[in-house]
Length: 114
Image (cartoon, rainbow, N blue to C red; front, side):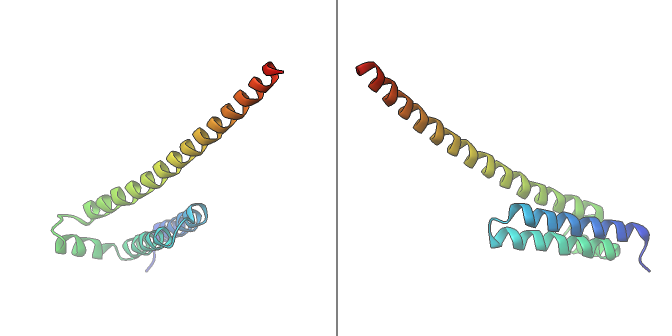
């Protein structure tokens, strides 16, 4: 029997997975990882007893700890994606400012040279 919280959590996971896929869309690897986390999350929500079985198989004491460790991996993935995005924006901004500064310096020099 599926409980109300399972429906809410499954809907939330599907929504977040779809939203993440639409926003990130940078590579097939990213899409695969999002898909993997969504499927894993839904499996753990629908079959919570298997988290403990899987945790014991992996040498972890409780299923809740396993979910916590997987959440750390997922959030690390998101943080790295955001870091690379910000780093790319910083480099693009530096390039634009450098080009504008050179253009401004040349035009100022031409004005004063006349």
